[in-house]
Structures are given as structure tokens and as C-alpha cells.
Length: 241
Image 1 (tube, one colour):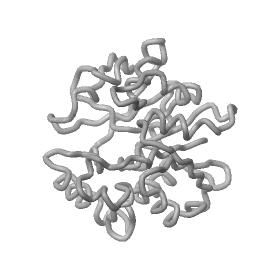
Image 2: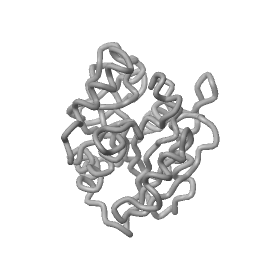
Image 3: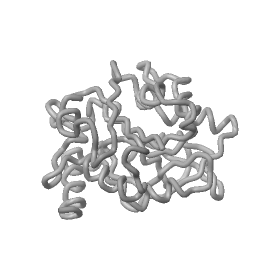
């Protein structure tokens, strides 16, 4: 299985902390934030060293990830792929999967500023749908563009949808879909995952979903970036030694 973690963002919503820190490297206890998710990933995805591989798409302060994690994590090889310019999450995922062999077929990708528990990784991998998205309930002030529309067990909209659930930032996708998330650009020339994924849904891609219990992510700005960081740290503190 191929896994991709998107850790290239400049952290514009991370406040002043983003000026000197890659946000996924924010310390929680004795570990950076991302390491908490990687430990859950090892358990929930039943990762096998030397069989599975994780690609880290890096950019902003990439040296912080390279120097801390090195060439492998708990025996699992790490590959670093640089996104040369901040051109959006869809572009970053495309950069991460471009070099993957076609026989990989499926990729699991997530945003590095999202905490993912082990049971969510397990549920995403076990889901019978050909593609899966993780969704969460967020602050009412979250952007309505992140809202999803669900019909039964299927997601029909992941962008400008209706209902209380929002896309949380983890997806299991066929490799050709992951490579095809650079169709529609935003105003500033960025290629974002969700509007591009919506074009595949419009063409018939079947997308299932897994619900996230608590949405812990360092990109949150409600009620403020600082308050969100404090909440994330309190929630994860003591989860692991």
C-alpha cells in the first residue's frame, strides 16, 4: 500500500507560529504533532515494514521533517518529495503519486496537520467502496465550501455540499484519481483536492465515507488559531508516553 502525507503547507492559518515552524512539527509532549498520527497509522493500518511505504510531500521548512524523521519511521521507508511551489493540496498529492508505479492501484493520503486515530485508518482501509473520504463535524463557522452531501452510504458532493458533515482531510483513492486532481485551478492558480475530486464524483466515482469522532487539526482557526492549538494539545496530551 502506498501512503502519502501532505506536509508542504506554509501554515498561513497557523498564525505567527508558521513563521518558524512547519505546523505538523508543533510539539505535543515529547513528540511533534505528526508523529502522534504516524504511531496511530502503524497500528491502525497494520503497516508492514519493507512492504508498505510512506511518501512525505514537503515544502515549507522541509528540513525540519527530514532531520527529525530521517530515512525511515519504525522500519518503514520514507520518501520525501518536494513541492517546489505552494500550488494547493491537489497539486501536492499529484506530485506525491507521480513517481509511484502503476501497479500500486490505491493510495491513502492525508493532511499532515490532521490527527488520525488508529481505528479511522483501519476503517478507511476496510471500507468496501472504491474510494473513501473521512468526514467530521466542525465548528459552525467552518467554511461552508467544506460541507459534504451524503445520500445513503455514498457521498455525492465533497465541495459546496449540504448538511452538517465536513471533509476532514484524509482520502483513500484509486491511483488514477489521485493523479487527476489537477484539473480545476482556484483563483490564485492552486489545485485543491476537493473541487477536483468533485469532478470525478460528477463522472461517476463512487465515494464512501468514514466518520471521525473528534476533529483535531492544527489548521483550525475557530475561535482563534491559538485557542485551537491549545485544544489540540490538551486533547492529545498523555495519549501516548
